[in-house]
Amino acid sequence: MRAGRTRAVRALTVCALAWAQLGCGVNALVPRTTEGPAMVRVPAVLAGVRDGRARFRQVFCEVLRTHAVVPEPDDDCERRLPRLSDEPAPDPVSAPTVSAAASESVARSSPAAARLSVAYVLGFGSDCAGQGDLIEQEMGPFLASLGVALRVLRVDGLGSSESNAHALRDALLAGADPAERVVLIGHSKGAVDALQLIVEHPETRPRLAALVSLAGAIGGSPLANLGSQGSLRAAAWIPGLACGAGDLGAIESLRPATRQSWLARHRLPPDVRVYSIATMPDPARLAPGLVAPYGLLERIDPRNDGNVLTHDQVIPGSTLLGYVDADHWSIGANLQASPSAIVRAVAGSEPFPRRALIEAVLRTIVEDTARPAASP
Image (cartoon, rainbow, N blue to C red):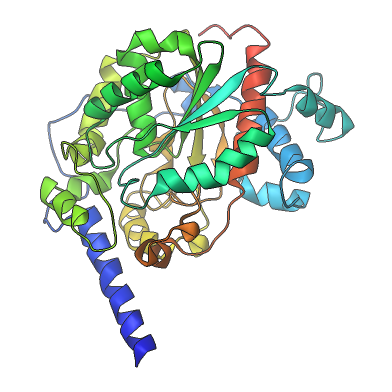
């Protein structure tokens, strides 16, 4: 009886979370509207995206094989980084293979020697799930072993990107060691908030080495067209969650028309390196709480992570590091470690080697900063 009651409570909770996230309105997923700029969908190279996939694959596979807590076989690395048909072959001069030469190159790219630190910016509803604490628990000791300090820049998970960018600006300038260069890692809407920070607050750029987007909602998400401030208020009241309301502007900030209009008006600053990692999971490995939203987005494109379409995750003008086989939540944090039974129930248990991914990102940044930036 108790087990059945527990399953029922979990089912109702999942439904409540789904309604809170997607909204209860009857708005179309992609409404016919005159809002937003003129749009055209083009290959990444025509959007000024630089292709860093081949080298990043080498670095990630080497880190996963020799530096990760639990080494993985090479074929698992291939599964973790799905190849699109246009991914270039590795440069035989700078990095011949994932071999002794590549391993030596990875070993030389020390984040500690480069005086890097990491600042995480988490996404939509992150405070509801206590993601900041989870990142500190998982990444803090690991990054410390690499000689890299970690800070989680906490923002309102239900707040607007404009409001959060101001908060990030204050936190970054107040807490950063001037001798260190900060790698700003933004997950989901956190990448949007961080992007708005570096564009609209130029005084922060001298402190930054790079911005890295992990499954960033850069072009917005059609799911936001189904939401409302009312759905955010409902999410803030779900028992067992701890959501800070902020200005309740998150849904508006995530609408595709809002994000695309912002992108049309702004360009990347030339003095901060910007990287994109997009998620493209095997649907069989989706978290239980992402199955329903994945199905909605699948109507537009099956290449989505349960929250954001894959092609909307790449920042125009950035360096594309790769596509990873992870859903929208698993690339961000280990939600199975959450103290909340609600969060654990919807998160599923599919593991992802986040520490190896972040180490590979840092080593790639060190390699890139050792040579002059490519001209646009």
